[in-house]
Length: 271
Image 1 (cartoon, rainbow, N blue to C red):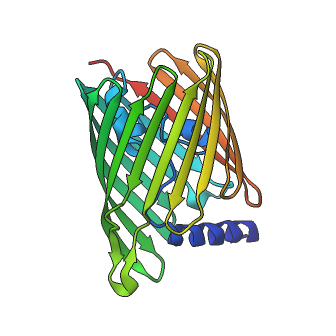
Image 2: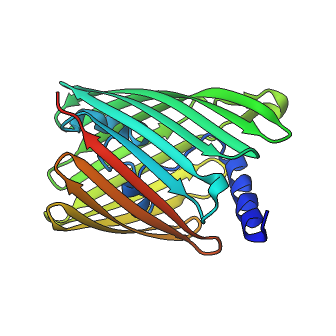
Image 3: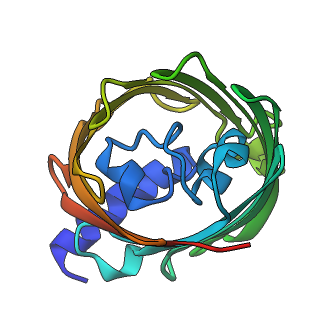
């Protein structure tokens, strides 16, 4: 293993063990917005923010591929599907990450109900399994709770609690999965520009402030930039929609390890 690869693996291992169980938001669109995925409405909402699913116009599926710092062994693949039905939304998410040293898999199910055209509540549960070299395989079930309110045509607020049940990974030293709380607000400046601000508090880390701007110069084209404070990291990306399919790309620039690339493809499904 070359030195840069070893360094990347070491840093990611340390971070993963402190935040085990908590996954970054799915999708290149979220990655391009500084990782602020709470108020981005697409099929990945099934895992990022379940309460948004009733507001999705049509059922959809999406797949995301992430390559971190050019290191093949720590690629990540996410698949999500969201199905709105009347005032409800139903979702499923699948995630696979890691290599033979550290391997993480997740299967999640979620449901949401819009009690009002401007207010929705979501619930989710996911089973995660972890395989760590010289440690063995463990797993647990995390619960999720989320809500969103549309204050008006321009302002939207959202909240998400991940693993408030503090799911246990192992009895030895009472090892538990990370608990996280996220609070976000978005502002639609005009038809072309949307801004998002999100604060994320993970139990083992200082608060992470994420922000992003989505600029739509044409109806089918998006240009995005973002920033997150914890690393810190700068992000940028593009998106293009053609009929019922959408392609998104993002790059996340780490100050020491380099660039991570995200590629997402999503489809709307007629019903």
